[in-house]
Image (cartoon, rainbow, N blue to C red; front, side, top):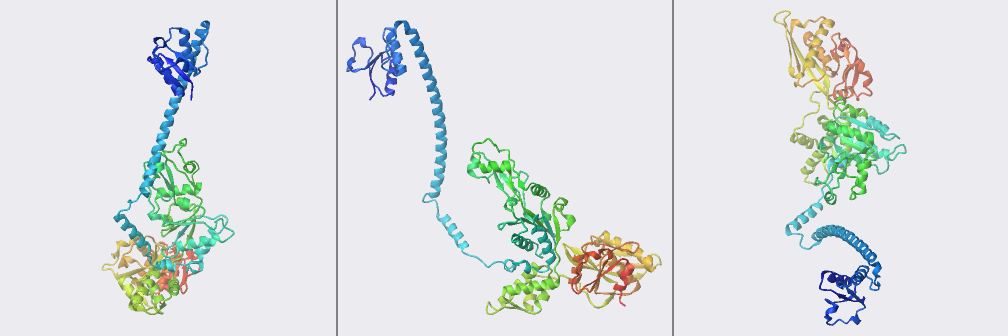
Length: 631
């Protein structure tokens, strides 16, 4: 219990505050109006240890009362008459100090209360969310049915797709790409791996080879790839981004507070959150971009910057490095960026000159070979063994006539397997017959991959050139017909315009060569040159075939029908080099040709020709004639 205090003048303003002050400190207080009035009621002066008469007529008593009030000290002795001014000044100083402390305490208390209220509101929100998640009755009959439906769907699983089941598991199971595999290993399985672009037709195994080469490289000592190096695959034609950089699955993006993709707690506190992209997921491994030629040009430029920096840097107008609510991982991403040290492997069916020079200048280039009929047959036999089915002897040959893609060949075999299984009612050992495959061909409306076939016969005015579309070689059939002009020297030339201006120029070049080489003036003939099918020829490589077709039509000399040729013919009769020789040779072999004439300048491009195909380099049109005309 505190001190017992008697306060007089309690009815006044000052007296009441004096009494309240003593009560606040725990003292026992009696209050009277005035001791001189005798109104002491139940108060005994002897019972009070201290008496504070704030309304005393004596100045000394009032000052003493103030001293004891301010100092909270009932033992303070009265001041001498001579020291009253000094005592009053001391009281004033003490009062000023108390007021300052009180104001500071009140301000701190206010700020503490505000902070506590903020934390209380945040805690209430969190508790409400947690209670909503945990409270009984959140699930309705409708949501419960939807949950049960999802669980039922999760219990259902079909067999793996045919392509997944029959995909090569080792590099030794890949058919027809031995050179490409060696080249890619030499780029990846080395201490300093290179970025690579893979060119080639569809369905020849570019993606599979890239994945298997990385797995092989991880097992070698001469490679920086770790055992957990990732292989991240994405389709360049499907990648999308926006100018605000709010969406960029390849490089990553910043989800600003106003963007719905940010975390709720960060969005509420105004903190932007970087989202990592595929380039960071591929860190330490390979980023494989299929159809890289379809990648947006601006996205290509951004990708090149990442390849140089080996990091991705983020920017945001909402980023404030002094924000105390900023998580350390967000601060690090903005200040140091996200790691993105990977090897880029791009794949495309486009020609090299259709790929961005910026990308090509930073990448090695590897070309995958088209698949020959023998390769397709091997793929079919290999797939049949993995499926555990028996196939008729004609199946591999028949499939090789309808496709030059390994993926398509496997799909045709799988479709025929389904047809055979249905025919047997799902009972017994399945054997795929020729009729099963032909049924698939008819229902799928398939056409022969090489409708023009080489034959051991001759024909006047019909020659075969070679073309390429998406790295797949094909036969271009050219025919010519010549008649004596109705008026000598006034002959005409007809040519189907759909073949293009370059093919038309080749006709007139051939006319000059005929006059120079064989003394044939086409002005004496009505000549009609036709590209069968009306396809566009986007280069001059059919010039040699047009020349021999026109010469055969005018001289009525038969041409061999198992010989194809490629090469531009100059007006001086020279056969100039052309591109895509390997693809054209495979196309000729697919069509059953026995011999192919190529420019002598392309002799170094042949390498190992397809089996059963004779390749003859020629420097002039005259050199070609003994090989194309029947003896």
